[in-house]
Amino acid sequence: MERVLISPVGDLFVLHVAPRVDKALIPRTNGRLSSVGWNKVGLLTSTGAKSGRPRTQPLTFLEDGDGLLAIGSNYGRVDHPGWSANLLAHPECTVEFKGPPRPYRAELLTGNDRAQAWATAADFYAGYERYRAKCAPRQIRVFRLRPLTG
Image (cartoon, rainbow, N blue to C red; front, top):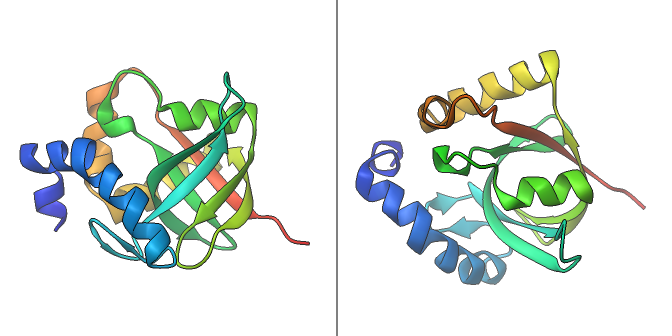
């Protein structure tokens, strides 16, 4: 599946088809099934940095200890993805991934924490390294999302 996703056809699919499918499919499967398989993509709902309105975006999440990693690759585009600006402005968010929606708080990773998270992400999906090279000199934002309790 990874080879297909990093191909030109895969790029078109993940840019134009998958987000529409996932916004409908993920809530109907309790955060488990997306256009690319089981337990790979979830829905991030953040507060718009400028609008203040809820914004929902399908994202690949990687489990990381007691939280999740979210990689702001934006498919290698020059600009950061809008959801990453939203998390910088309003770190509280909701994630629907492998279960019902839950509240989280996002933290932008830097230094060694970012390097370790990036290594995890690149090991999970080889396309991230391609995106990194494509969007240079922009540094891809990497967030750790920790669940909020109580």
